Length: 141
Image (cartoon, rainbow, N blue to C red):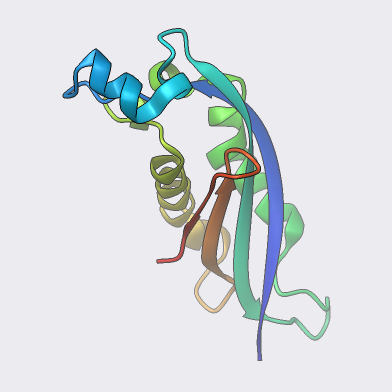
């Protein structure tokens, strides 16, 4: 039987939502206060959901220490206290919306997942990101 376990992580980062192909007026109308030229910040919450079989010896479906280390290296350390627009490579030419951030987190984790959790181990099932209490994005490949 497959069980699912979710683990949450928090980081603070700043960003500005701005589409360079739109006019300043169009950006302001589309993004409102999120288009502030000086940017603004969020306490992002990332939820990583994995699925796997419960190990009969450990009683766990995933080694939480490994998951924590993976998320620290791939998500938290690269994004924590950063300006996403200027300090995170994936957003230097892209818009750091919640949707794009969730996709980047998913790609970053999947790109190294099998190095941390070999075939037959837990699988990355879902990424959820809370930008605010009202804005949540979910990636379920």
